[in-house]
Image 1 (cartoon, rainbow, N blue to C red):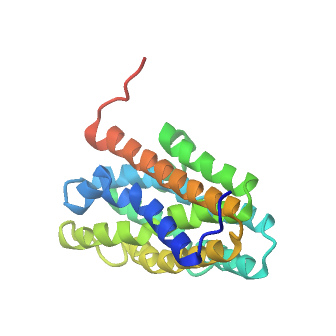
Image 2: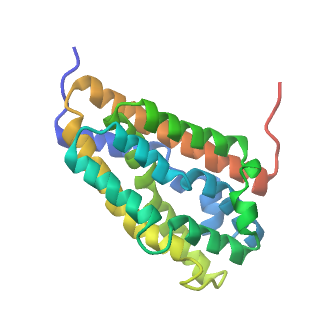
Length: 236
């Protein structure tokens, strides 16, 4: 019979699960950081990324409805407030960057532009938020997905300034999320460590984090294949 892991050991395993397939080392992330992408390719990324992060407050709302813990509810409300009400909406900042790169709000918001891999990630996020145990959903969406963001954007953002000449105003989306998602990611870890209090829950959380990294990697690799590598997926 499995035993409950010490919190320190459990955290190490959660962190290892995130790092094991992190999008920080994906080909698209590396090409971005190395200055190999065009503004048009940044615009295509925005048109996909909007459909992943645009509904994030919706995911959190479903998680809130399934959450029995007051401290965790406070975190979710704060996270939703920051996404939608705390100054400029985060999606508006993303669209601002996209417009500078040559796309339009209408083009970004059009769901018909979603790649199948983007739709897959979005649908998985909805499914986890709506149907899963709150702790498992937190492990998936906050630890597995949101906690990756600061490392990815710290790698990409200097290039936007130094090679492409974007202004602070134009890339505010990235600077904001380096700070906010580091805070959110840590809160997610603390909630999972506190409330995953059975061996079964710990195991489900670890598997959810692993699947989250797989889903995000599928999504970002889909963008790379469609707009950078431009090689179609093999068909049977």
